[in-house]
Length: 84
Image (tube, rainbow, N blue to C red):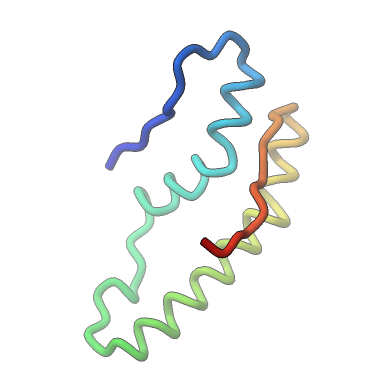
């Protein structure tokens, strides 16, 4: 797997952090973690398992990882959800 940082020039590490985080956490999770729902053949069961994984992941990021980033002085941007 790979991910990109689309930019022309980043002159400051703070700007790089704001463009990388928290998205880099989600990328690492997908790259390193193989979920059981990915092997599930029943679509309904897979959807339930995927939703449970999402709840666990989003809570871990929201309650643990973002605090860890703040503690390290990493400034991040959380874009609000939108309907496009």
